Image (tube, rainbow, N blue to C red; front, side):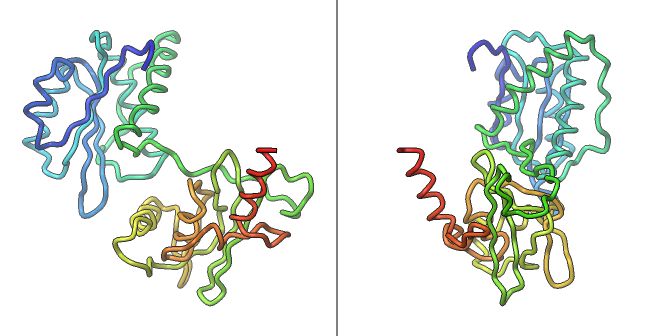
Length: 275
């Protein structure tokens, strides 16, 4: 990225020998180990004066990880206080996102930084958080959204956000969602199937499982309930999680108060924007 001195190296464990020969791997930096423990996606976040040496140690002592990411700089400008700060912030963000289990037993021991250095590290992290999803490391992405204060009527003419509902009465599924910033955000309190009932290999089966593990979908009798607002990139992903099976979200979600489908609403919206 333009005007950024950082460097991110991600590699499979099978390529550890080749990856750790790179000069960046012997620098001061932070690292993330990625894998599964007891069928649960897990990460471990650490820091070191020599990240390559530390990862070699983990290769001997931790058998669960399958991939690693090393975060350093091209000119080796980070020092111990910097990486302790970065480690602590990365652990905190992974906990906040709640997407994977965290193998760290502590939250890190960040050394207090001068205000200017802290600002520099926060700017550094902005780039890191932008780059990691591009290398398929999504454990720091936070899809949950703060709950909005409920209005007296979701059909209020001064409600700035468009709201939808999805109902499958025979399965007692009832969800509400708001459309904001290009995302369909299913609202806390929406009820979903207790288990994934569709094809086990379906793309959204894994998403359903991840939301259960992350505590977004919690048990409520013979159903599950969204414990917090959660943002989906597609109407079908949101519908599938609620119904516990593949769902055409374009048709299943209906605009509250008007009854038109998400597909029709989107078509009308795109038509008006084009005009």
